[in-house]
View 1 (cartoon, one colour):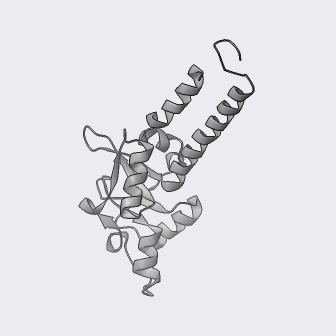
View 2: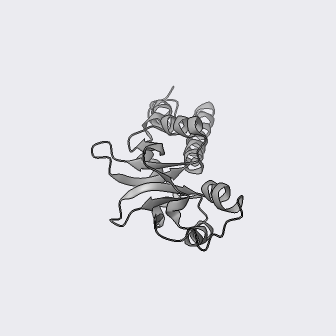
Length: 170
């Protein structure tokens, strides 16, 4: 097997949660919302940014929780509550109940965390000081896996037709 193909095979394990975040739609938008904001403002952001989760902050702008579309559906819509008068802090998930990804967690580790708790989003934190870094979704992980699969198919196809079989054959 060519060195390039072997390198590609090993690169899948090198993709970290931080790398996934940098390619995520969450990297390009402000996905934080204050816990005292109205639920209606969160719903508007879900729709405007086409996202399914927001990081909840306290008055010091420290991330303290998450609010997902599922929270809205289960705690507001399904119960027939008025979302214009409800606050984020009434329906979001706080503190120790939040599953997080460390910024160096692998794709597989992130997937396992999501599958274990049946969630679709992970907050990404720095290992050293538990500082909030970003957020990733299951869709972001799937995109990364598909990108890796497409690269692998291209490399195997090239290898089969004689490209990349030995150094300098490209």
